Length: 264
Image 1 (tube, rainbow, N blue to C red):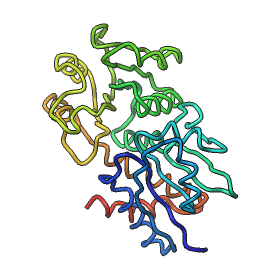
Image 2: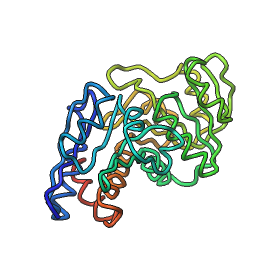
Image 3: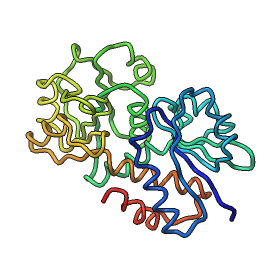
């Protein structure tokens, strides 16, 4: 197997721990390859940059997941439904697109226990991915977003949707924050009274932001809920992506063991 080069495309991208995760796996599995990061300014140049750098595969982070979808020759799995790609693999001169965020999150959430209903805060790309995979599993999905505008995608697909103003008290096993609230500043993703009502009837809470205890997580903890950040999701989506890079020929348990070192 000739030396393979992989990368993560995004803007910003300097904070990403994906290179650490993937290089631990490459080294641990004794694969001749290297994984780097590349700040991509213009999403429409994703395909051109992929080919000019002679990459075997990339992971794609914000804000280029929709651009990655259009750059691919073929889309597989849940990525077709949500029109967002976070993993691109070169397969016989063709770019194949996947979304590993959704299955990665589902694997993390399942470690809590059975989830029959979920409320997702936010209406961006991550919310679309999670709504689609939970819906596929037969889980009841509710979307809450600050404004009505971004809810149209979810309304068209029959999801129960609410804004902060139209909020109705309801029960969900899992509450998920997919917004960036709490990433840089100490803000909540929705009004505190709304969140307190959600938490009072929930079993678990997850914030997709990783390596940080956000105000959302602190509030959920104070309500007595088991809480986790997005680290497991990041790990599991990375494991699935890595296996896509190598044609599903590897053992996920082995990849996971090596990638986990990036979080120590």
